[in-house]
Length: 127
Image 1 (cartoon, rainbow, N blue to C red):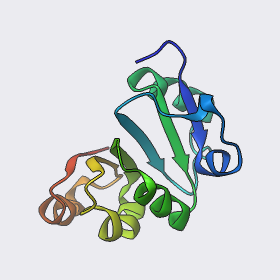
Image 2 (cartoon, helix red, strand yellow):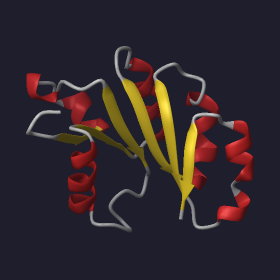
Image 3 (spheres, helix red, strand yellow):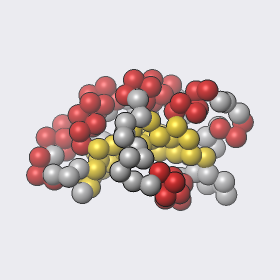
Image 4 (tube, rainbow, N blue to C red):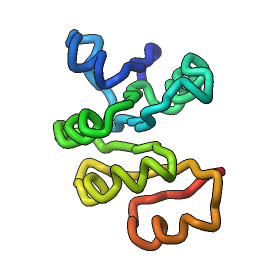
């Protein structure tokens, strides 16, 4: 990992492409949440994820997120999403080769056994 982290939204990535926007890592973290920033401090979240991996993408649009995931060919993707949004996106992306690991945030742990049993790439569901 380099010293500078690259944190951006998919919208930023599609509209502005520079050499600085290139992923120099073998892993891309994608956080899919249409409400990103409404419940948490986005700057703090960006800093925290930037410590884990230098290349972090925030996706707020379902279709753009899927298109972006499908466009990645070299890197592995760690996908982070909420339980409600997981139900929306996992059927379309969970079998893709580039998805390595899925992390889900949920308010109700007891209702998530379905996800764990049906999607083998889910690492965990976190409250």
